[in-house]
Length: 290
Ligand code: RIB
Image 1 (spheres, rainbow, N blue to C red):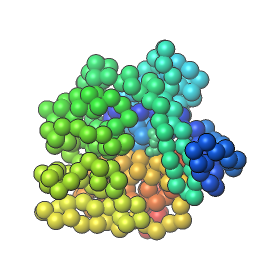
Image 2: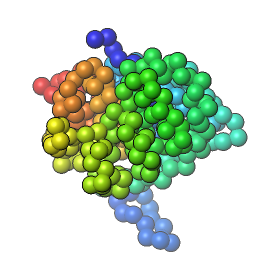
Image 3: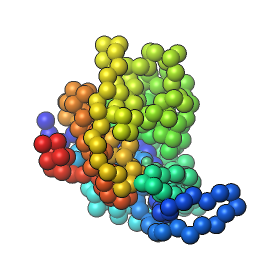
Image 4: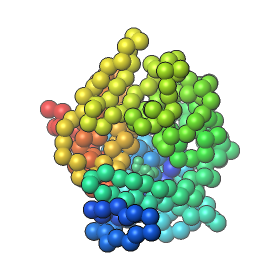
């Protein structure tokens, strides 16, 4: 199969990363160790992950008309992600993620800014391009009604959708059912899905960090083990997983093999700093798997 075309409809953020040994208590000031400004946003991260693995990636999104927005567009172009459907909007700033990285794990606060302007009306103008894609990849950092519009459209035209429900947000069950696969982490799965959602079970691919990834087949749940590596920065591990999973599924791998491929990509990604910093190329994943 030729390289798949993946459409990412999602967020673009600038990650403001503070590295610290300790977290401050309420009202406390601490000295941190390092500060970095990195490209981020779950949408952009997943787009870059898929592009590094060789997919043709297009992205629909918005940035502000500011230097952060310019930098994020350049960063995406450098990664061969098509930015022709990303608009720079005035009067609102590019999305920001304040990230505190401590003990190789992160805490994140997002200010969505321009990501909130990715409305259904905006996305609608790219309907033709969406329908030409092999797979659509969605997250929850743009307005929920836009995600619901995309799910509806893709269902109608039979375009596979991987929906990464991060950060966790409630949605009517009819829309969850429109996704091909739903990829929460353990916390998001606990918050969003319960036993009552047994009719969603076959769509749920739950990432559980070092405990592997669970998926369902013939009404039974199975685990694909994760690879044990020493983490430097877990930011973007889920995004790498989703980008890689989407590439592997579009290339026709069966579900457990696609999850294994995505696990390898995620394991490589957490060994370097930054959400996108450690995202591997295809050959890096292949040598890791050998
Ligand atoms: O998943 C990691 C991402 O979440 C970061 O890059 C940050 O921008 C937030 O969107």
